Amino acid sequence: MNKYILYPGCSMESSAKAYMESINTILEPLDLHFEEIDDWNCCGATEYLGINLIPAYSLIARNLALASKQMNGTRTVVAPCSACYLNLAKADYYMQERPSLGVKVNEALEAGGLNYVPGTLDVRHLIDVLVHDVGLDAIRSAVVRPLKGLKIAPYMGCMLPRPDYQHRWTDHEHPTELDDLLRALGADVIDYPLTTECCGGHMTQIGPETAFELIMRLVADADERGAHMMVTVCPMCQMNIDAYQNEMNHFFGTDYHMPILFFTQLMGLAFGREPGEVGIGTELVSSRNAMAHIGVEVPVTQEPAAPRKKDEGLPMPRRWTKHEGKEIVK
Amino acid sequence: MPQMSDERVRSRLREEDLSLLHEVSMKTAGVSHLEMCIQCGTCGGSCPSAMDMEHTPRMLFAMLRAGMRDEVLRSNTPWLCVSCYHCVVRCPQEVHIADVMYTLKSMAIQAKLYKNSTAPDFSQTFVDMVETFGRSFEFGLASRHYLRHFPLRLPSMMPMGFGMITKGRMAIIPKKIKHMDQLTAILERANTLELTS
Image 1: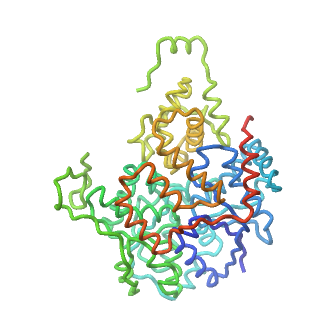
Image 2: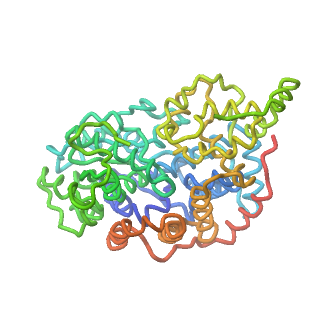
Image 3: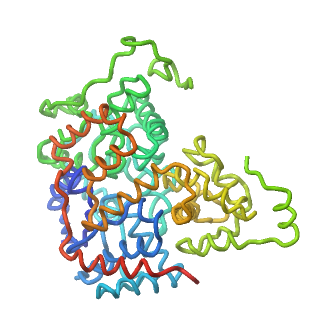
């Protein structure tokens, strides 16, 4: 049995519940054991770092300190969320690159009776562990329901392959690990050059126009290339492309319908689990039509209101529509 | 375009003042390499939100070198950074660009020089939740943030919010960590500390 320390991250309990549920279905077939960090706290996402440096790193480091107390035959911390993974990895790396940061952070940790020696742990993302430790052969042999006929745009996002402090990926901009994993499940993986382009991150909250532009590019390209769905490794990417797709469609007057699931949901499915067991159906852009391509039935659920049809209502200046080419009229 | 008065330009000529550059570099996590920028512009060319920025990162770094504190801290550039790290992996000088942007945000907040409060308020609201519960609380964060900054977006957000709640993807009650007092003590101590070397 392969043991790891798990840092779930806040979204795994809420917006990315399907991610956690589906992770739990793949552990046993792959002989993995994840032990959750006891009483872990939020990593601060991309928000705390922009407010105050030492508190931000101390917040992250509390998790590292707690995890280092739980090292029992393993020093590897697994984070399934790309933003959490990056924050944990970054804190550990910078405290080594700049020892004075480590000293200050430990001074803060001391107030809580904790300490952390930078470099003690090895922080890795879930897909890194699956592809490099478990291996594609083991994954392939666990497949009982190959996803043949399902065309997938593999979407890695930014914070997993970059900055890549430990040089784990084949490339910073076009890594192929996710493609390989999905192929091992039997899926038809399409070429998706935007695989590590940004989903907008927190811009959906603070600068929606910037975010919608980025979401539209990703969705439009996946659609044009004939993908039935996108697959992601990050709760933030899933949230932005799934939950904001409707609003993005409103904004541009488009009618895209591009479901996006977590790669572990497809793994669970390929390992023989039922859609409900891996959280399929909790996405807002339903994957029902996509799943029909592999003969998997997804129950009908209420979707957010459809965007208004193009030519109804008051004449408004149109920015871009799906059938008019890629020119953006501003 | 950033402007400097003739007097300020002349005073720069007399003695190059790199204190701002050093201050930002010092306050940035890791070894920022900011001083090594060769003004190649790879960063701006790689940036997915450069089109909405008042200054490209390259220009902003030149302004740092020129000591234009107010102009830099008023720029919307750091607030539009999406932390995608494209520039970071492409920078030939290995400048920690995204982390420099975090530093500039925190300096702008401290000096109260940001022009638009949407982004700083969002970060602050997020941090408030974390400092209260130890975890992020999406429902509280979203409702407080949208009511304050995007009330007009609320009608179009309703179906989404409703969907998230009915599908069990957004809890209405926050979760709190067990040892909140420990985290509070750590953060209180951390607040008194600064990177000085």
